[in-house]
Each structure stands twice: as structure tokens, then as C-alpha cells.
Image 1: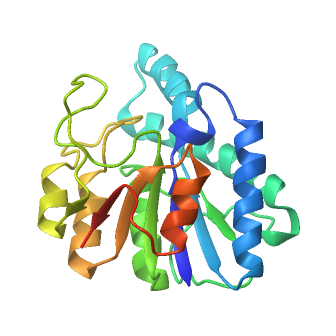
Image 2: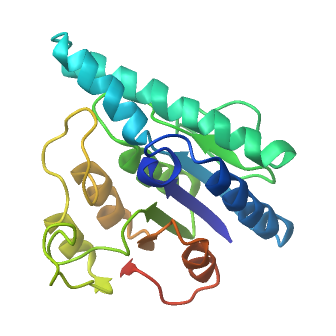
Image 3: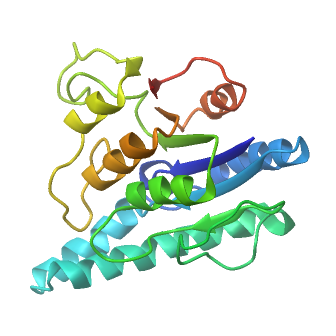
Amino acid sequence: MNVVICLGGSVVATPSVNYEYLKNFSKLIKKYVDLGYKFIIVVGGGKIAREYIEIAKKFKSNENFCDKIGILATRLNAMVLISSLGNYAHEDVITSTKNLKFDKRVKVLGGTVPGQTTDSVAAEAAKVSGADLLIFATDVNGIYDKDPRVHPDAKLLEKLTYEDLLKYAIKKHEAGVKGVIDLKAAEIIKRYKIKTIFLNGRDLNNIERALNGKNVGTIII
């Protein structure tokens, strides 16, 4: 199976780089590489990126410049993930989705260009590579009918259509923006009918369940 994982910065680098998580996540990926799975992993920026962006905004830096800061942060996180994967990954961070293909070693990306989030990078990677599955591993259990951090009665939506996904997308891009998914990514997923799962990546059992075709989080069909 060929899988793209969008590893949220909220999981891997909030409030700082999570060594123990990366160590265990890499063990899981290595296990499945040995089973014949192929992976492309896109890493988010997390709190580290947002802190740098907020400081730049205080100095009145424009959105494009702040996006570039975020991209650098995601690539630093990507490099740490590559370190944890060792020989199982390509040594360099991939900086473009153009002609992106799966191979025996894991390919790791961060952000690519200003004006989009790593959500879009992951969706584009899944489209270009012809992935069988796209996983968004975040710090929440899936997509809810409303923000579960604010509303205790929020309900997890176990299944959504591609059209429904657009309703929960972030409509306006801003450097360091945080939400369910950005609009460009949702549109790519809808247009190319990419099988997509949103899950809580903090629990690695959830990722393993998704890799084994079991129900977890929110599936987009």
C-alpha cells in the first residue's frame, strides 16, 4: 500500500519537538516498510512555527515572508523525522511535489511554497503520487460537527462525503493558520476522490488501525 501521512505539527512539535513520539512513530513506519508499505510523510510546523511567525508579525512582516518562516520550521521538523528514520528515509527533505513518486525509502516533506499549508502539500503529494490512502494525523480524534475544544457536546463525524469536507475547510489562508484542513487541500481531495482519514495521531494505534483498513477517526468517501 502507498500511503501519504500528513503529520501535524500539533503532534510532532508542540510545544517543542517530541523526541519520544518521533522515536515511536518511526518504529511504526519502519515496521510497515518492512511489510512492503511505501510512505510519503509531510510534516507540519506546530507551535514552534507559530511562535516564529507571531514574532515576525510583530515586526510587521507580510504574509508571504511569514509563510517562508513557517516553511523553514516545517523543514526543520522534517529533518528531525528523517534522523529518526535513519536508512529507511531519503536523507534530504523533498522540497517539491512535482513528479513525486513512492519508492522503497520514505520521502519526507515540509512546506513547499508560500500561500498554502502542509495540508495542501499532503493532498498534492497524494494526487501526484497516486497514493492509495491519505492520513491526516492531528491532536484530535477526527472531524467534529463543532470545535471539541470549545464545545464539550461536539460530536465526532465518522463519515463525510467529499462535498461535506469543503464545509469544514479553512476558507482564508494565513501564515500559521490552524484548523481542520485548508480549502485548497479539501478541493484536491474532492476533485481526485482521494481516500482520506482524519485521526488522532498522538495514539499510534490509530495510525496502525488506518494502515490495516480498520475504522478510526473520520473517513472521507
